[in-house]
Amino acid sequence: MLLYLTFLFFITNKINAQISTKSYFYGPGLRPQFDLPVRYFFIQAVSENGALINSFKEDNPFSIKFHSGDNSRTFYANKILNLKNGTFLVMFRFFKSYEFLYLQVYLGNEELVQSPYVLNAPIKSPDCNCPIPISQWKSDLTCPNYSFNDTTLDYFPEIQLEGLDKRVFDKFPHASLVHYTIKDNKIYRKTLGRYTDFKMFSDELLLYLSRKLILPDMEFFMNLGDWPQERDKSNPLPIISWCGNKGFYDVILPTYELTRATLQGLHRQELDVLMTYGHVGPQWKDKKKQALFRGRDSRQERLDLVEYRRNDTNRYDIGLTHFFFFKHDENKFGPILSRIGFFDFFTYRYQLCLDGTVAAYRLPYLLSGTSLVFKQDSYYYEHFYRFIHPWIHYVPFTKDFNELDRLLDWAEANENKVDRIIQSSRRIAEDHLFPDKVLCYVTMLFEEYASRLSGKIIVHPDMELVQQSTDVCTICKAPRDEF
Image (spheres, rainbow, N blue to C red):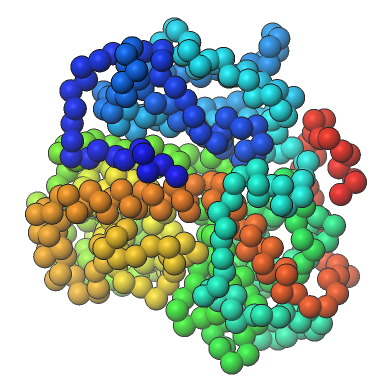
């Protein structure tokens, strides 16, 4: 999507032209129909003679303002991030819905030539309960044509609903599951298991989607634990999970970490993929020439890494931030180190990514950044792993940490190849991890899953209705109860 926004890590151009009001803005967030919790567009810096400015100093000279043409207050949050290649990422979130809005973009105190820009159609807040047909929603977001061939959905060409709930509950009596029914775009559920608090993440996702689009009627079983459940290849049952394993057959959604960040950006959550994409950190020549790892003690390999290289502070900055699983080993593998803010990760050249209890949920954020990612081989995977490849999007390493020194030597001697890998990983973020792509993937997976159901979809007697937002969205073109 943004191939023309190539990040220039190893080229520094002197600024020989001042940014002018001829700078222009573009991107999907300028379309009112691009209905996301956090919308975004880009500003390209241009000189007075129309030349692109492809590098810029640290500060941000631009600002934006939305207004409705009268004196009423417009409720929104925004953030502008300098990509340091002459392009600026503009993120914004509305807390109220509007019939139309004016967007003004300023360079200092002056408006850009392109400003004001009119968003001349209804702009819906994330809470606006005004669903549209799924085909229209996908078109509005220009969703990619995701295919689910060669995924675990292949094991479920037809899903017989009759008696499925009993078979699932009998087979997984100790799992933490939610049995969902979506009927007439309302969400119903029944929980199974002792630890079901994480249903708030799946509830939040389903409620948001049902406010924006008309979901297909369906029943499914959501696994609330980190670990996948279904390992029976000969007679698998369709369990939807957040993380997969090469020896299991669960159907994989984007993680609750990624979906919550997508839904709560610029609101209840600071860290999301747009933010890590935009916090590019110092230029490559100014980044620390070390490999960074911070994390808790959630896997033996993390402790092994600390033991192996914590004393080599010239090349590594490694430590654990919390002991829970191996409290008895804190004296051996400590001391506990303070956390590093995630945006400060990109002050380092290299990032080490190791599994935790399952796949490391930080990987989407690392891939969207401006450091080279070293990823340990793993049986675990997230929904987007099928789109990433070693030596194209990251540098692989095994459980043998002895090879890390050799791989770092390679990276230091091959900066051009490193640059290409980093650019490729950022394109993966653009193509598969930006908010629109995450929600497209979820929706299209549900759509494909629903198409394979056989039997009557029912609201079971012991299910409860998951209450929807009470926001009255007056800009809907049709009453909510028509759907």
